[in-house]
Image 1 (tube, rainbow, N blue to C red):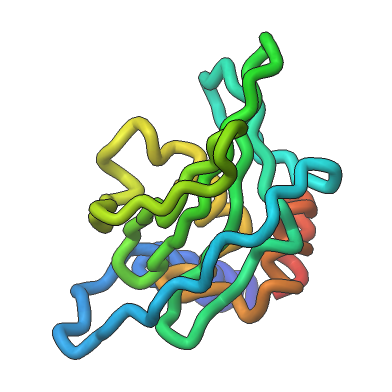
Image 2: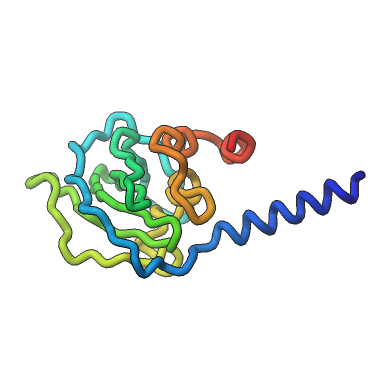
Length: 167
């Protein structure tokens, strides 16, 4: 009986590891027009711990959306120890492990659209470290978007153990 449980657990872990890897892009996939960035709110941010970063990161829970094209869009705020605040309106494509910036917040002008932002790998670029943490801790479940914006908010704000046992 114990050997059976160990084998089942090993198979489940192997399946989960395989599922967590990005898949080949669907050649017929089309990205929907991204909605405009929401009003920047910094009073209810969900803290995101990014290892080895001098910046403090947070995601605005009201900005999180899972859209019909399979993209998780959100606003992430980065603050330095000197009080400088930057914000990005981003999207994560869980099935390919990519991130894209749609807009940057400028304190003087508000949101500024980024028109030439390509999809970049979450795994290859240093500027995407916060995006990878967001993907791994709530936005994505394996190679797919999490169930809903509500579930992403719960997962981003919960402990790792809570996320694992409540799926």
